Amino acid sequence: MTRSAHRAEGRAIGERCLSALRAAGAAPVDADILQPASVLLDLYGEDIRGRAYVTADPLRGELMLRPDFTVPIVRRHMDGGADPARYTYLGPVFRQQEADEARATESLQVGYELFDRDAPRADAEVFATIADLLGDAPLRAATGDIGILRAAVLGLNTTDRRKAALLRHLWRPRRFRQLLDRFGGRTPVPPARAALLAQADPMADLPPVMGKRTAAEIARRIDALQEDVAAAPISTTELELIDALLALSETCPNVLVALRDLSVDMPAIGAAVDGLSARLDALAARGVDVDALPFEGSYGRTSMEYYDGFVFGFYAESRPDLPPIATGGRYDALTAVLGGGRGVRAVGGVIRPELLAELEAGA
Amino acid sequence: MTLKLGVPSKGRLMDKTFEWFAARGVTLRKSGDEREYAGAVEGIAGVDLVLLSAGEIPRDLAAGRIHLGVTGSDLVREKLAGWDSRLRELARLGFGGADLVIAVPQAWIDVDTLDDLDAVAAAFRAAHGQRLRIATKYHRLVRDFLRQHGVADYQLVDSQGATEGTIRNETAEAIADITSTGETLRANGLKILSDGLIHSSQATLFRGRRRGWTEDQREAFTALEAKLDL
Image (cartoon, rainbow over all chains, first blue to last red; front, side, top):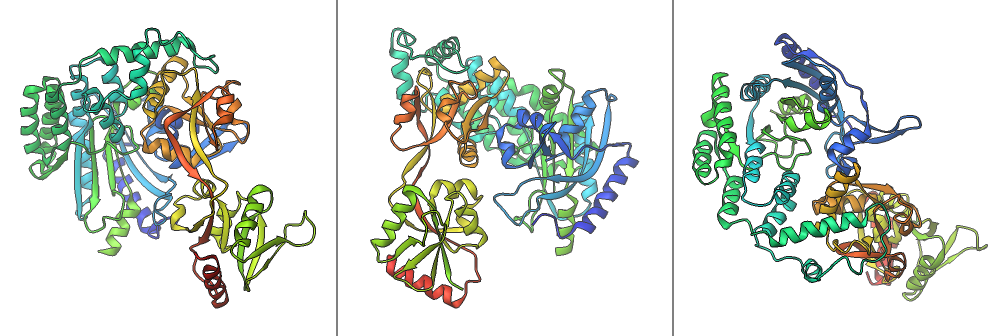
């Protein structure tokens, strides 16, 4: 399938959402369908080739059919947008669906992106706005906060290199776990590495170096490995705190209580937990029933998006085969990458109106 | 309608395939001229031989243009997304074996595993401002493998031949290529990562999963199954 069978109804729902967002003060923006592939590849890595359509232009090189609007809108905003700024858009995005032929490869998205310094208030505004647009569709909300895990990693009593390695893999749970197990001494040093480090001078009999990676880089990595093997393992207490954080799955108020308990032993997450608390207050002020709102410690870690704080999604309970009907989250780090180090605070969400139409048709 | 069997059109792979079928009482041969890509089948009725490039056999099978085909299991995985929902493996033929592996310069004494490769990719990107390049022609297989193992900050560069030379030429930092003994890799100053085996390939007989076979085709297939002891 290339397009949803519910194209016309989806378009109508999308138009309604767009009008509502414009009426609420968001500026309508558009983005080119063909985006420079290099920007997206540098951001998402080679994986995106398996998910987005890549094409080539004899003059412009590799181009990609936009897999989302967020990246072009951030780039545009970073070139001189208002502060705060609210944007909305409606249009097709393109994703390869190798694993599931039933999923549309071209689908409509209507979105809302908010650039505002007051993070808790902005998080609540985006979530509540998306929730309002979804109306009374039978959806289950999911929320999480990558920022808390990030703060926990930064607060570990270990080397900066280990923290950097873990932060780099927040979105790859399997590699994150492997690193944590090794840094915590749960898995032994690989034998080849142990043998290398046991040598008096590992660089003494270096085979001829070829290619762009230099002997100096190899020597630096060996120094890093020496430092790592000499460093104390991350304590069992800390590993258990991370495990406890990742295993959280409760309503928001209960999670908040649990996190306050965890932060007694892990003070580094204090500010992030305060942020969650402020967000919950802001959500409640917007009429969201936070007492019933679920929170998962691991939510948002496997998505392609660059979310690094608040994350949310809305799922059709009656249709577990469907992708999430709406998703969103905070992406401050993405703005820093695209802004050449100069970041702003940003949060956004999208609705997939064709899925909403499909859901309504089936109900 | 006959049942169409696709076989690689030249070289060792074709000769070995012919031998494999001959040993089971089915004679395949090129008809007429050596350069002609038509074939004949003896020893079983209702089967036609189609001689094709090994690289085209996966797609032709998936599209239903041929019904059975012999090709490398690596090519099937590379050319077809979700290959096992579209083709079924009938028999591994026991020849044409080669491993798709990740290899790096022997001078990278600090790199033995994918974990090392990932760490080096991060450091390389920080130092050079570009992602670590891996030269290959097996883009899908390599990308899926590296994603599964959580390796980041690399990029694949296309290399359709002489891939071992790309590092010396500074068009790549590592490679993913097929090897049977590892000899060429070693001769080029490369070594295989200890957990860098992506796929062990061999010549394999596949059938397409497409429906809509005629009664004749099903009968021919049943007879062939019996003859080949599938």
